[in-house]
Length: 446
Image (cartoon, rainbow, N blue to C red):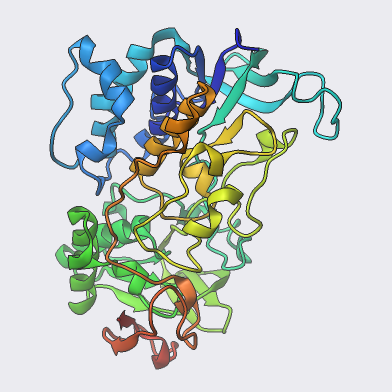
């Protein structure tokens, strides 16, 4: 099978980086991308500024491929998603040339002539990557190995706290968005709710609170499932990524100023459509009413449908690659150190098949581009037979300034996570008489 290419699924940051590393090792590669251009998913959140700086967003082999073309990468600053695409990902795809096939969807991966059940002769057969292009034409590519870097962008989690859409969520879809907003002007003078505790939710809250400061009558409510806001505000001054630190600091200021009402321990169970908008009901019966729009930013989950005929080992909880799950589990910690990033940890029962990038993290929310670049460097070395390089860990992640997991999901939980039990400081205020004052915002300080 050495004459066959490695197929990479996805022309995002990690998929293109994987191709660059493979080319550097004289391995033929084909990249399949369902979008019309490089970084198609990134383009959909192009208005958002990244909290990683330019040097942390450019892969080493990709830089070496680009520099002979006259490309000069930025040495500092924090690009938007759109700038990341136009100034790096698009030129990188151009340098890869016809190795990248756009407007082509991977519909399935398998072993030639073997479904998932068959053992006999399995490892001796190449992979078959089934595709369909924009005209509907179906095809099949034979591959010596497959790297799935397709991400999770197309599969946002619902607002419902049990992983399924809440009652009424689907029928209220015209008032619910699962993307971080760009233009928030349609919500001037309205009551807007953000559901979620990650960086996307924080971005949305800040964009909405900026508008609320300028437009009297605009209300912003932030619903958090967990019982404290430790992971929401991040490490602030203790975060080694300054822009990520600034995000938490700005959120704290908005809360302190009373521009946003924060409700903790709120797990959405139902959306009720009323004459005045939506009423959101929690599992414990609390309600937030008169809602004109909702941004449900509760993370993403991987699409595993295309992998149903290959043998993969995923963590039962996170749907992350089993070999790295213990180090990224948000129930345990959110510390800025990850050791399991190489080909050995990413390997699957299906020899020659790897899941990398944000998809390797499954539902875990802590992925950084630096992690993905190290993943694909190691996997490319492994496929080239350079096992010493594949085993070497060259990843150095910036600390988050936060050490503790989502053991604080329940207000009564104590001593959870990877640090000692925190003290509790109450700030903020209760947004509605319908809400229990015990669920106002709490901060944990270790």
